Structures are given as C-alpha cells and as structure tokens.
Image (cartoon, rainbow, N blue to C red):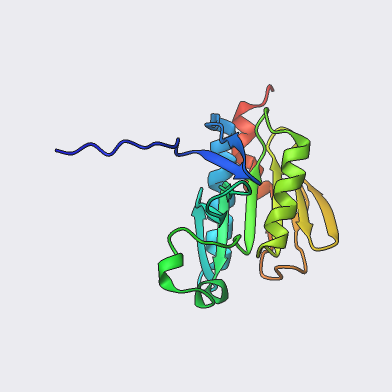
Length: 178
C-alpha cells in the first residue's frame, strides 16, 4: 500500500505569499460553525451549495500565492456556471458568502485583509462571527453592519439570507454560567 505524504499541512492559509496556520477550532467555535452551516444550507437550498472549510485558491503559486479557507462557504449556482467543472473542487474564486468564525488567536489586521480579499475576488458578503461576543459583523462592498444576539439578520447583498441570530448562538447557552 502506497502512502501519500503531504508536503504542505492541510490547514494552511496564504495571503499574498504569507502563511497563516489555520487553527484547529475549540468546541464553541465548531458548534457555531455548524449552526452557521445549517442556516446557510437551509436558506440557500436550490440557489447553490453550502460547505465547511472549502479552499478558495485565488493564486496557486509564486510570491503572491493566496489560498483562503473560510469556516463556512456558500457558492451560488451562478458562480459554478461561470467556471468549468474542473475548477469546482478547488474554486479559483471566493464564495458568494464567506463566513469566518472568530478564534481567540485571530489577528485584526489579518482578518481585515482577508475580508477585503474575499470581497475583491467574488464574495458578495463576508460574515465575521464572534461566538464570545455573540455578534455577526457583515461586510459587503462599501457596507459594514453589526448584528447582536437577539437581532434578526438581513442584508441587501444576499436578500434571501434572513435568520435570527438566536438560531446561531442558542447552542452556547449551556456553556454560560448561571
């Protein structure tokens, strides 16, 4: 049996050639990631596909290599149709919706740069989900909006994406001190 050795760790992001390790999530991160996936998958049914940690390989090689791995992605049918099937497994574009769930070690400058890259390479909406603060910051071209637990989410960039933040964060209630 042949063994396939990887020369590159699976969870490495690159932005303009700089490597950023993708940290393995803690339980709260994973729970909120799963809830965001469930919401986007249900609401996006028939419009495209939702997935977890799908690569967006925006520049494959060279000094400006860029490979981002959003926690949750939504790729629309129109995005798929605009590319050959050979590109679908490792898309050379950002998903229509890119969702990043905050981890304690995430740097603000890197996240800002990452969100800008998503928006400049195909994303219509980038969601910055903070489980600790129970907020979602929505980034779209020229528009940033903050939603808090208890709010209803809606954004004109993706009109069909309507949900209560409570749907996403309720799973964390069992972790809170009472």
